[in-house]
Amino acid sequence: MKSTIEKNVILGIVVITILNVVVAGSGFYAMNQSSDLRKWESHTQQVLANLEEALSSFSEMHASLRSYILYKDSFILDGYRENKKILLNRMENLKSSTVDNAEQQKRIAAAIPLLNEKIEFMEATVLNQKLKSAENYSVPFHSSKGNELSERIKTILKEMKKEELSLLQFRRGESESNLKFSIGLIFLAIIFNISFISFQYILIFKESKRRQVAEDLLESSNANLKNYSSQLERSNKDLESFSYSVSHDLRAPIRGISGFSKILMEDHGDILPDDGKRVLEIIMQNAQNMGQLIDDLLEYSRLGRKEILFTKINMKELAQKVLEEVSNYYPNSKVQTAVGELPPAKADSGLLKQLLFNLVSNSFKYSREKENPKIEIGSFDDDGETVFFVKDNGAGFDMKYQHKLFNMFQRLHHLEEFEGTGVGLAIVKRVVEKHSGKVWGESQVNEGACFYFTLGAHDNDAQLT
Image 1 (tube, rainbow, N blue to C red):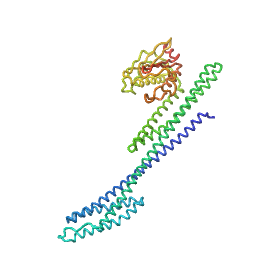
Image 2 (tube, rainbow, N blue to C red):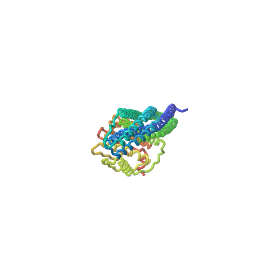
Image 3 (spheres, rainbow, N blue to C red):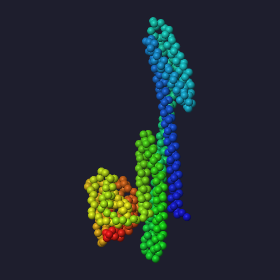
């Protein structure tokens, strides 16, 4: 039967998977909704443009007719007729583009007869002017009937414009609400994912503590050593396999959240309010941090399954190579490095490189704020045993927390000060333990830190061959 931890994790994975599917579906739906809303906004803006042109053409017709009455220049009638043509065309456009709006259709139905009557009145005025003799320089253009028709037509067109402006404001509000809803869903999914990951880490940490207790009991019970040893080995393999499986399965949802967040920022960032952008950036950063934490946990799990391949290693060459690689991650760093005379070691080259890489990376990270940062890699003999060390003059740590240094997910500095996942030194400890060695650290706050490690009896063999 499956353990309670496994059942809880499986249940959690199912819930998180369902949640992420819902978020993905909601995100897709929200993007489609946003696209439709943008189309309606564009449609409303086009209707407003037609209304503006209709009002403008109507006013221009009046202006042209006045000019014609004053100056009797038939050339002026060309402008009058052109504006009449535009006005009628825009009214037809308005009629066809507002078929979805019953109120607007009523207004157009009321405006068109009035407009036709007004045009007939204006055409009659033109004809009257043509029939007048040259002695009659002008004929009054204004009449109570003509003015009444003009005012009624303008009133209807302005009401239509007011309606469309109201629709435009409403649709923009809907679009913004839809976008906020999408961000809220993604943020909620991030919270659930982070909570789930944290819960699994707590379970794994507790299981690791339980295993440590079992190891202590094994050492004190020689009679049952073989039996307890086999039980511990099985427990370790199950735990490492389980940790690897959980971390691997969590990669997909985290990448999904990160991907959707980037799509949202790229496609809709220009219409996001400042608060929305800030929240989205927090989501993206947290997803990136969770991804790094999962990668570190996977690396930690792989160490438990890796078989040790002992070879003779030139420690000085390896140290110089690691310093060069780490310095590439800090191109602007002014760290002064020094490598002492290091004896050869007998160890797994890949694991030993990982150990040095983690220690040197920590030294670079915690020394970068110093005015003259320095890092030294060296060794010394301690009663026939070679002790290697990595020393810096960085931020250091309080020795009262020394017992927490190599525990999983333990950090002695705030994340705002120095980035990291709290797994690097745990990996160092596991590598040293697989070589039957020891590792410890010494420091003073703001005076730097020095980490020491040995590689057990295998390393002593390297000194003799």
